[in-house]
Length: 144
Image 1 (tube, one colour):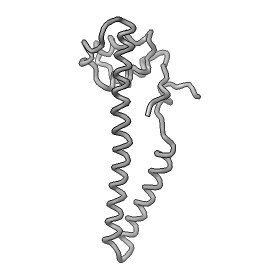
Image 2 (tube, rainbow, N blue to C red; image 1 turned 60 degrees about the horizontal axis):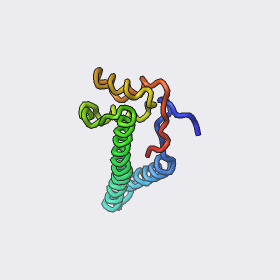
Image 3 (cartoon, one colour; image 1 turned 90 degrees about the vertical axis):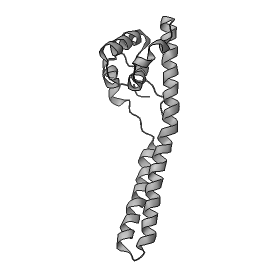
Image 4 (cartoon, rainbow, N blue to C red; image 1 turned 120 degrees about the vertical axis):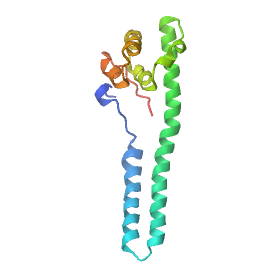
C-alpha cells in the first residue's frame, strides 16, 4: 500500500465514482436527449426526472450514513488518544474545536497531537492548516 501523505489522502471508491455515476450520467443524458427529440416528451421527461432523483438519492445516502458514523468514530478516537496521552478528558474544551479541526487531528501522530491541539485553539487553525502542519503524517487507510 502506498504511503499516505497530505497530497494523496483523498480516496475514491472505483465502482461508485467511476462506474455507477458515469453510467447513471449516460442514462440521464440519453433520457434528456430523447425527451427533446421524440414525440413522447412526457414519458422521457418523467424518466429524466427519475434519473435525477436516483442520482441525488444515491449520493446522499452513500455519503450521509457513512460520514456520520465515521465522524463519530474519529471524535471518539481523538478523545481516547487525548486521554491516554494526558490523563485528562478532551470534552472539557472540545467545544472550542470545530469538526474540521477535530477530523484533521486524526492524521497527527501522538508526539505532535497535543501541540497541534493547543496551536489550533490558540490560533484558530483550519483543518487544512492543521494537516499541513503535521510533520510525520499518520495514515488513515480505513476511511469511507
